[in-house]
Image (cartoon, rainbow, N blue to C red; front, side):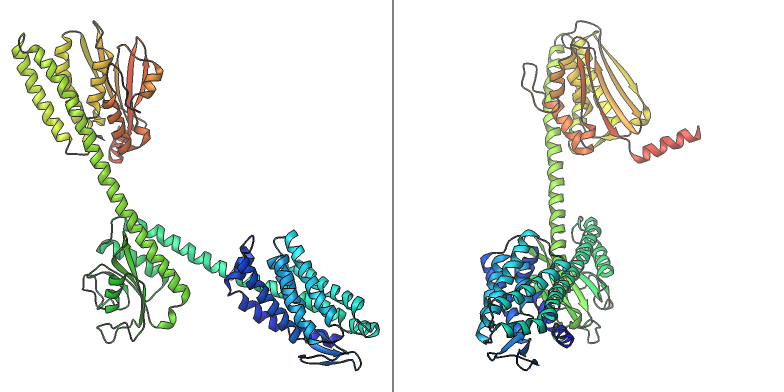
Length: 589
């Protein structure tokens, strides 16, 4: 009995081989990870595990119940012979990994084959194979994640059930009893261990693959994080050099290079004495990749470097694409073709796609910036006519009654419009320039209000060099004049405050005019409004440009009380230089 157990354990080496082969099949991995197999996958699994069961039968030992002797290999049995084998392992694993259908299917194949070999246990063993597949499949349905202990238990149980079926069906009974006494315990132990061993090997191989995949995924993400900042500038000599340094350090290749259509942008590693940045493309394979846009592998015979003693004997050249067109290549060099494994090929192919996507992002970012600048210009252009019409109406009213004052206002308007035109050609200006702009505007509006308007300035001189979008402050002041105090008979007050608080520059425009409801105050600046007094387009544009430049934190904040007045303010972050200067000034004090 002990000798039989040892012999059967020795033959479990066949199981190890089959397990390693099995991990190469896609359908098997889907059996491990998938919730449910497709029909075609089930057929493949049934055939594989059924064949596995047949191998388990042939690798068994033929036992003669008369002589009580074992034969090493069994291909055909006499009427008084049976087989001590590991057939149950394949059937049990089919049920455990694939479910009842796969288990029963593999059991039918393996069982029918066992029946054809003959022997007085042929029918019993064939039936037991089907029962083993059903039992294991039922267990799989109850427990999705199969443990090693469960595999051992099911394998041993299935073999024990087979012994019971042999006792119940096989005749003569005396031979069945003698057979079970001789092979029962060794087969129960060996098949239980075999099932657990098979599952252990599968788990280890899959875990190693997952670890390797996770390692390369982590490396790819690290490369993506490091290269993104450089490729945002597009592909040029500077960005290519930075990316090559990162790839060379991360992947430990002999050399890394990046080219455009015509020249080498950067080359890091061996061969940099003749593969120089700025030199023309030297190899035909690089030109082929640019032309066809497909990855190419070159060995010592096909690399065709112009330098005879070049230490780079093999290369993988991958395309870099932008909007579907190849704009350059990414080249990884090796000493020999042996270093270029399938894993390396997959990694480089993935990096080629990754870097191409980053170039796409850089291009999209440039397009966004251009669109953003164009929108700013358009918004600024919308404001200039808005003020012009109001100013001309004021001047027209003075031409007959006060021509000298009208001429003075025309000079102010000319200065104002010149400043306006300048503003549409720049993306930002200083608060000091904006304040001058506002004063030019108010010099015109004070004439219209005669002695009714008083303007109060509370200005922190340290804040006047802060940058803001052009034509930001004047529309807010104009709103206070046009909508706040226009119906006020006397004591019209507009206060302009520019102060620094907690690292922020706060700009406020207050009026003591008619005010507005809370609901309307919440709408202004967020959307254009249709009313008798205006559309709110000016403040909407101001708010839009502030948030585009500084973010939502810089949006207009409006508080108003009907009959008391309105305050509009916004806050922009103080530049680091100004903050440092102020801190130094406080320390010196």
